[in-house]
Length: 99
Image (cartoon, rainbow, N blue to C red; front, side, top):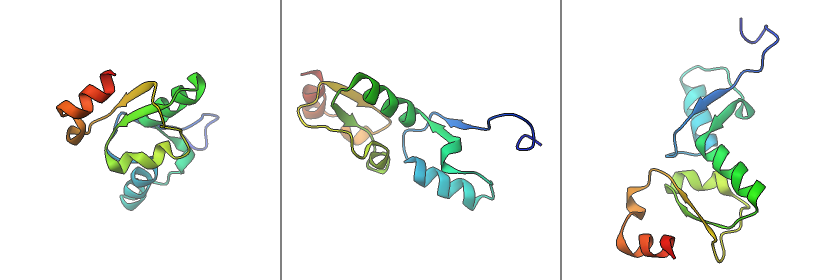
């Protein structure tokens, strides 16, 4: 009924453990009739902000989340994006992030 109504449908999640593409595959595998552009994640929001602010992030995110940042420059970072990625939370990486 939502799809036939004059509404925009979005699926929103705060997950940072997987890319939008992986999430789409998981949801369609569960039987959801969904398109990639209907998914909005916290990674989507982070990418949008990075592009708006034109910054170069140090990405402290899970490896599976990296495809959502394809094309974003990360050389000489001047911002930090933090996701659920415990493997990045150690002294060396935290020191790098704070610098």
